[in-house]
Length: 121
Image (cartoon, rainbow, N blue to C red):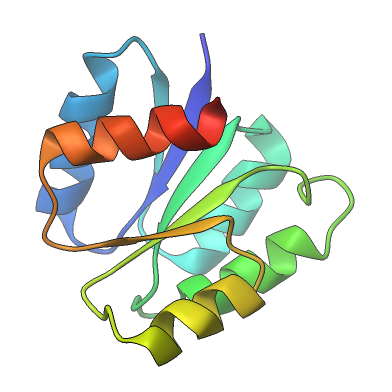
């Protein structure tokens, strides 16, 4: 069973992603901020991370992505950034931080599953 770490400071969005992905038989790990995401990723070695960009705390999603992609222990883990900001500059910043893909809110559960399957292969 593949492990997916979902990271968002909004509890309802975490719950929606968890329910959606659990239907596809993924093990779900959850974090509410970038620092927690980095710690969980290092400890649990997920197969994928879905990371919100705008979060409170020491690391936003872009900084957490940079930290994870610059650490040999977590650098190969695919990261999909999740954001309500869909401007070209936002997408470029996300990809420059090391994200493998960029997904915009709001999203349909089916689109999320398709995106996860596309990135995981």
